[in-house]
Figure 1 (cartoon, helix red, strand yellow):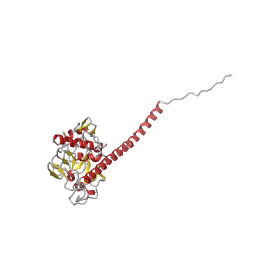
Figure 2: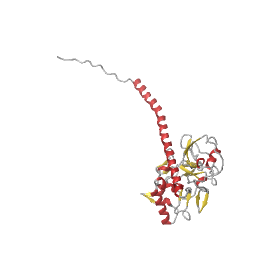
Figure 3: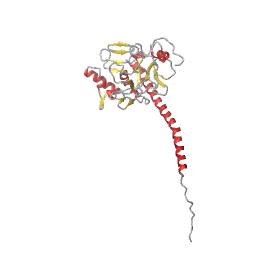
Figure 4: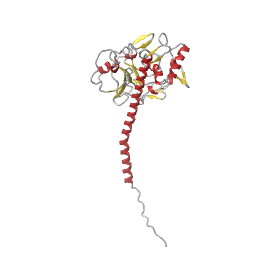
Amino acid sequence: MFSHFHRTPRRGFTLIELLVVIAIIAILIGLLLPAVQKVREAAARAKCSNNLKQIGVAIHNYASTFNDKLPPLLANRGASFQYGGWWHFNLLPYIEQDAIYQAGIAYCTANSNNNSYSATVGSGTIQGVNVPAFQCPSDTTYTGSGPVTNTGWAGTSYGANASLFGSVNLNNSRMAQYTIGNLPDGTSNTIAVAEQIAGCKNGTSNYARLWTVTWSDQSWNPEIGFQTGDATWNQPPQTGVTVALANCDRARAQMLHTNAANTLLADGSVRTINSSISQITWQYALTPADGNVLGSNW
């Protein structure tokens, strides 16, 4: 006995149906991408904020170790220090990078010079060591080889406030006038660190924020608030800055996030500054002893 099965022929997609499905998928992807980008930016912004908090803890630990003193903006080997190094170098032991710090001191001692960046670390030198705590993921001007405007040197996305850390020149070093415990305007009203792009290009001039420098030169120093060196020292963070536009002001902070810049205050807290901040409020926050009250847009 034979059994006969009736098979219903399968119907495939028509071209129109296929195009409709593709269009729907494209729309869904278009809706999803901005959300993904927002999540990525939020994560990058949080990472930058955490880096600043880590730096804030390092500053206070340095002060606890050295009788309440703030780390110098620039240390030159001589009467005051055993080594030459920029502000970031002084914080290395307090962000779990003591091996790099000790290598720099040993090199300066052995060679009687300031060039801590020439010390051997691993297969290279300090000059090329990328320290994660000094890099903001939102800074697109920083690559594995350093700032795009000066590869081969390790850079940073965070500039120290020269008005706080480097207001006094002593033995060719730039040092703080006040300690962490006697800031006239208070630690919660004084900016310690602000975000900057590592690769800074203005017109045809290339600048870079290099944490490994051991000399004072505005072309390479990661700093803001340098009152005696730049006419624009008191201007608020820049928005819309890119290497392609060549519109970076080396003396100022930059907003690495959408209309926002993370800043570290001297009390160790992190504050987000938006593009509505006024010039005078920003100036008051940079200067540690002007006696002025910060504006309502702070």
